[in-house]
Amino acid sequence: MLDLLRFNFMKNSVPAQAESQHQIMLDGVSVSYTLKRSPRRRSITLTVDENGLRVGAPWRSPETRIASMLEGHAHWITRKLAAWQARKPLPFTWETGAAIMVLGQPLTLLPAPARSNTTSDGVHLHVAAQADQPVMMAKQATLWLRSTALEWFGQRTAHFAPMLDVGVPDIRLSNARTRWGSCHPAGRVHFNWRLIHMPAPLIDYVVVHELAHLRVANHSPRFWHCVEQVLPDHKMRRKTLRLEGHRYLGAWGAIQTDVTEARSPDVTKWNPGVVPGLER
Image 1: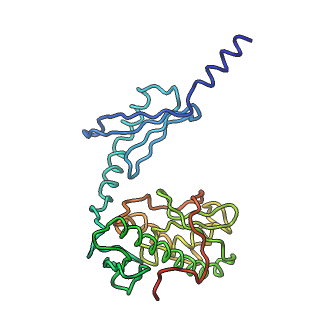
Image 2: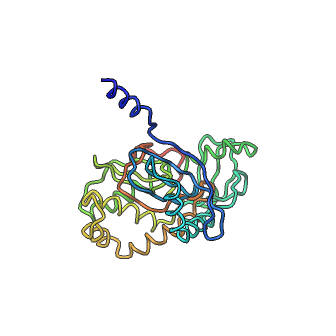
Image 3: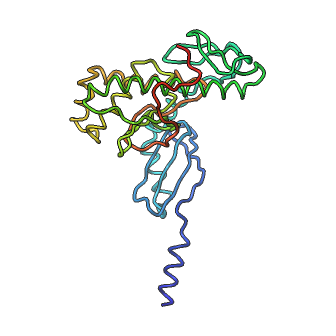
């Protein structure tokens, strides 16, 4: 009994995860990384994104093994870190004259404190806020962008669904930082609202990609055949989204330009015809 109690105590005393910061020289470059250890992990993983390098490792994996893994992938790590550094947008200030991208085209911000809703005339975004209130300008512009995104995604989904022989699904906006779209097992589709910054052809690729998942849950040849039937140039669109998508994000920074079938948080549901603050 004593041995069993000691075993249970030791088992329960191991935290689910431990995180620490480290540095290592790779290809002559000093690289900082976050190390996350977990007793559930069985192998070492490397992830490079907008937050830098993250290393996942088993709980008892020795430091020498982790260092060896990093050194063995030094070129890949430094190349990916440089690519993410290049994707970082210039500092953005919410002020009169600043431009945000909508459907791949710039809209110039103009404060319009007398208006109750933020609207666009196709050239300017008339923001319902004072010029000296950047936080309010950001809030009002974001509300308009999300409303515009919801309507646009809804229209494009309704356009492509019949081509893929699927019903028009329930649409949600997500605020995900690592994916443009996702398809929930229950049949609803999620789109990252920041997609509204992208040119329409790139948005259409994400829409078709997620709708195709309503027919094929995985990324098998059958899935890509469904996508190609609707968008013969889908490979080029996907490549452009991955390599150039960050250029349209402006104030929001870079995000991993890819789509997956994983879940995203529900934020907003699409209700056709109810889009506040949107001028046609």
